[in-house]
Image (tube, rainbow, N blue to C red):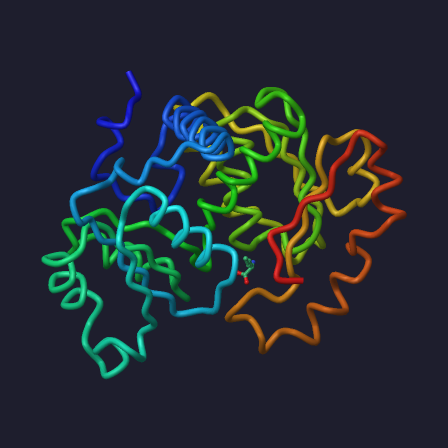
Length: 278
Ligand code: NVA
């Protein structure tokens, strides 16, 4: 049975490593803690005992950084925020050495990295859990929060239809395909110019998802396919680390802009979601 104990001590690098039950458990727990907090309850004794979260962010962050810090503080943890320049990583110390050293002091590491492989390397050498706070491949914390929002707004977690419009092969599109399409059984429509179709990712996902209930993912370049969805989701066209392609991307993605006309096509039942920065 899924409970806090069965999740304790595990890395959180990709939602592929979590079962549907575990994801639902995490969402229920978040919903419960959120509602208790807004009713005035304080629970900063949950992680009492001087536990420390180290955040290492290679890229800028507003929402993930602040919400992680606030959440850890509300649970009773101490938080240290740093970037590679402030650590010896910036002077060439390896990820492996950094992980081996800091895990003697801290209880968890949350990292935002340019390359997903850096997280895998960190997790290989750190005994404490490593949390993905965004990589080029996935952004699991964001989509977990998005699933909670959809549950609250739509009143259900099942049978959601979501259209992601824009860069179909970025971290957000990937994580939405995992949580929605492969794990929660949603219909996830990726609507994107062909050059940015997540074909390889979707293929690998479908293979893995066979074991977890099957992926329900539709890939299209036709914006008319937003019709009838519960949610239209978009993201920046130029993700962090892709600045060199900015000019080309702005041209290619222009027809995939989410605006009032596109939302009209989707229908009055559709909510608009994004992870920003705009
Ligand atoms: N795809 C975006 C997400 C930002 C939250 C990026 O990686 O820059």
